Amino acid sequence: MKKALIVQGDCPCHPSRAIADILAEQLQAAEFEVSMAHSMDCFLDRARLAETDLLVMNWHMATITHQQLAPFLDAVRDGTGLAGIHGYMGDTLRTTPIFRNEHAYEWMIGGQWVSHPGDDGVTYTVRIVDARSPITAGIDDFTVSTEKYYMHFDPAIHPVAVTDFDEIVMPIAWTKGYGRGRIFYHSLGHRPNIVQIPEVLRLTRQGMAWAAR
Image (cartoon, rainbow, N blue to C red; front, top):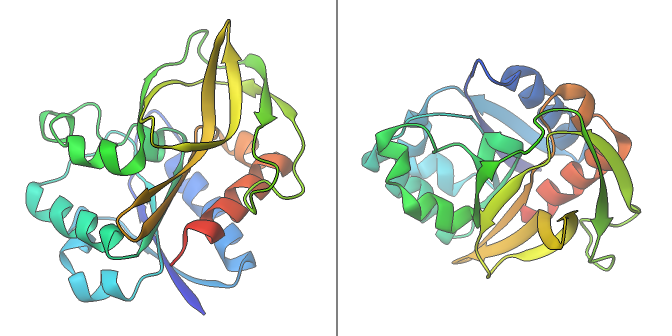
């Protein structure tokens, strides 16, 4: 059985614990053994990271030290998968001086939140652009009403789902390599009801399973 570690922290902007519980349920449904950490000190345990097949980042607006970040980066480089959704992974490092300077994290995941014009409740279409990927298997284009993320992203990412900002195509879900590690991210998930949309649940579950070692 593969092992997944959800790195979970509370934030006033998002119901992060409820999201973490949904992610844990999806991983268990995919036959992962799931544990949860509530401190960035979990990254200091290199032996534990080496035995972990998948890290799930679920901590918006957090702080981290260089001592904590270095083994995190090393673990993914060495083959531990990394997955996450919405601001829990795509905006983890934005608001504090320490995280703001940790560009290595943004490089690893392949992107960073910039804005969500219109805030919550924007209705838009999620378009599947890689129907051959196991991440999108069984998922057709679908519509959501939620935050619509505009992101800075690395041209090295491989989008599997996108949306449109006027004439700009914006990745919503992508994969990326980092050393021997696989990265999966999607920007949906502002509230639990969005994560629980059948297409989003399936995208999340299949993406996490794909990213695992």
